[in-house]
Image (cartoon, rainbow, N blue to C red; front, side, top):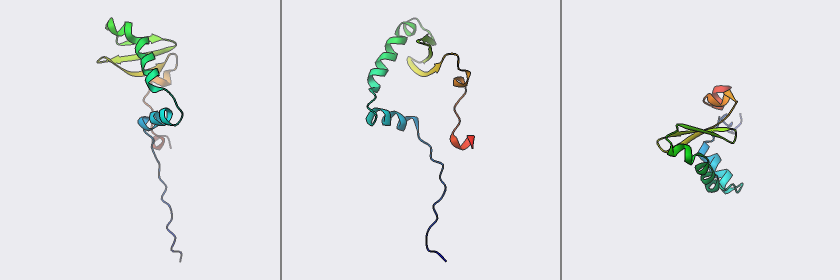
Length: 89
């Protein structure tokens, strides 16, 4: 009989926050510059009360003075909520 403990299979999720911080802190992506770029892209539409702005081939969805999501135009799968790895398996 072996005294070794068998590892448990773990399905590990990685949050969007963790991905964003990795891109920012490890890969050197300037998140604040991207935020300012998005702000400039949607500013006029937001000032006019738009619920979304389409520019540069993507749709920026606005809600309560915030850009809440970005959808790639012409890709219907972008409209469906993403499923976790666990749901896909």
